[in-house]
Length: 117
Image (tube, rainbow, N blue to C red):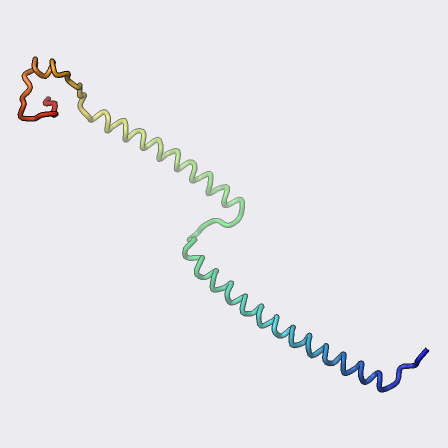
């Protein structure tokens, strides 16, 4: 078996130093990239936060917000039905008259297609 010489050790040391320099440069590049991504993330959070307002982000808060919105939706639907009933209650009863009934009541021809009260 051959014994390693000093020359072989020097060559190996140079090789290891080149690898160390290569990986050090790669590490510096990745750290730089990570810093840039963190800045982008901060920027995105800053622009999204005002748009979202006080929106809940965890599951419990989302479930609570969902329940509140469903209750509000139900209340609004009830209010809408009450308003519709009130509007229909305010409208006068209108009966469509047949041509014979118009002649009997004494409809005028000055308003064709209009049923007079």
